[in-house]
Amino acid sequence: MTRPWDVVLGSASPARLGLLRDAGVPVSVVVAAVDEEALAADWDPSDAAGLVQALADAKADAVVARLGPVTQPTIVVAADSMFRFDGDILGKPGTPETARQRLAQLSGRTGHLLTGHTVALLSPDGTRRDGRAVAATEVWFAEFSDAELDAYVATGEPLQVAGGFTLDGIAAPLIQGITGDPSNVIGLSLPLLRRLLGDLGVYWPDLWGPIE
Image 1 (cartoon, rainbow, N blue to C red):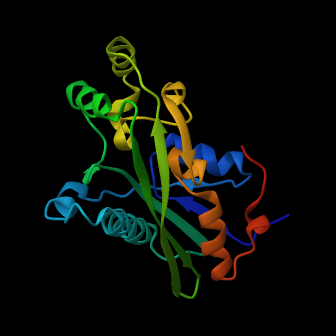
Image 2: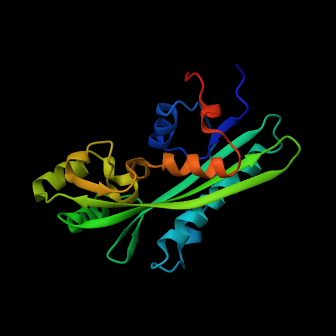
């Protein structure tokens, strides 16, 4: 059976791709360059939600531009995540030193993982309709030792993920609990995506199909 929509994920994140595929949604991946550092450079740290949404919008726009005209109704899904802690916005640590410094502060404390979501519905006639929203999940960290922290940083996992931790990977035992949507911490809030698309008239089961 032919699905009424093609779904394009505008992210290179394996976690986001896995979430959609595990939810039964076949997707293709198209990544377009966005200068995230330039956009975030002068952003007010108190407006983390505004920043992640602006980045998600920019990513969606870049992917739509790269796709050009579509021949099949297409949904572009774009997202950006950051961790808000003690008034600061924490993206990907990038280096082991930064990862260790940040994670040491998180032991036994809490913060909020925020993800901006943008969905763009593209039609062959050239029209586009958008939905956007930010999901926030509170994350509670267990207390962990310096030795555990050093061992975790040495795995390399925290370097390229928002806040320096994952819920679905090696860091899972370091997370005491969450308040909110767990899929948001992994990379995409699936309940939020379902709502955004529903508001645009897309029936979520229409996205299901065989996963290659």
